[in-house]
Image 1 (tube, rainbow, N blue to C red):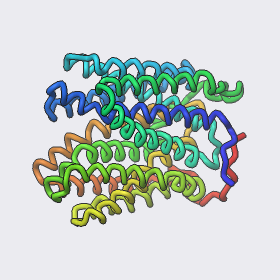
Image 2 (image 1 turned 45 degrees about the vertical axis):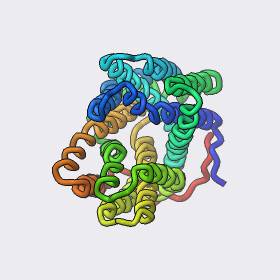
Image 3 (image 1 turned 135 degrees about the vertical axis):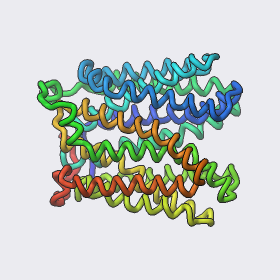
Image 4 (image 1 turned 90 degrees about the vertical axis):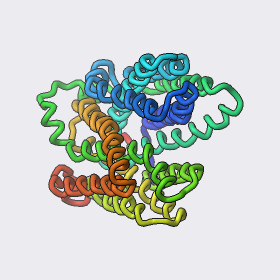
Length: 400
C-alpha cells in the first residue's frame, strides 16, 4: 500500500487545499467585479497581466526569502500578505490601485508556491517525489473547483465584495494551520538546506532546463486556452457560451483523475520519459480540436488534455528534486516559477495575435507546436534525468 508517513506533508496538503479554495473564490469573480466597475475586456486583460508581472518580479527573490526565513515562515508570511491583498481588492477604486494590488497578489502567491514546493521536495523520499508533488497539485486543483462553485453560491446571497473577504479568510486559515501544525525541519535537514553553495544560477538552470521548459509551456498554454478557447468555440464552432464552462470543468477533472497515477509512473519509469509521453498525447488532443465538431468528442479531448498536459507540472517538479541538492531547492523552485510566469506573460499576446490574424485553428496548432518543441527538447536532453536511463524498481512509498 502506498502511504506518506510524514504528517507534515499532509499538513502542507491541507494548507494548499485552503489556498486553492481562496484562489478559486477570487479568480471566479475578478472579471465580474471589474466588469461592474465598467472596465472593458481589453482593460481587464491588461490588468490580468499585473498578476503575472508580480510573479515574474518576485520569483527569483522568493528563493532567497525562503532560504533566509525558512520555508515555514515564508509560507505563513506570504499567506497573510495574500489575505491582505485579496481583501483590499474590492476596495480599490482606481486602475493604478487595482494593478498594484494584483501585482502584490502575484508576488505573495509565488512565495507561497516556492515555500510549499521547497518544503515538500525536501521531505519527499527519492523514490516517490512525483507522487508527493502530484498530490500537492491535486489539492490545489480541488480548491480551484470548490472555490468557483462556492463563489456562485455566495454571490447569490451577498454582495460580490464578500467573496474576496471570504477568500482572505481562507488564506488566514491556511496561515494559521501552517503556523500551528507544521513542524520545523530536523536539525540535520535544516543544516543541509542552509549548507553553503558553490553552484551558479546558470548551473542550476542547466540541471532543471527541461522542468523549466515544461512549466513555461504549461503557463503559456494554460493562460492562452483559458482566455481564448471559449471565444474560439463560440465564434468558429457554434458552441453556446454557457456550454464552454463544462469543458473547463472537464479539463480539471482529467487532471484530478490522472495526476497521482502520472506521479507514480514518473517515480517508477523516469520523470522525463513520462513527461515526454504525456506531452505527445496532450499535443495530439490540442491539434485534434481543430477537426472536431461534436461537443461530446471535444469533451473527451479536453479531458485527456487535462489528464496529460496538466499533470506534467508535478512530475517536472519531482525531477527537480532528483537533480538539485537540498541546499539549492529554494533557488531551483524560484527559477521554475519564473519560467511559469514568463509563459503566462508571453502566451496571451502571441496567441491573441494569431487568433485575430489567422483564426482559432492557427492558434491551437501553434500551441500544439510548442509542445512538439518540448518533446524534442526532452529527447535532446534526455540525460538530464538520471532515472530516465534505466527504470528504477518500484519502491514502497513511506516517509522517514
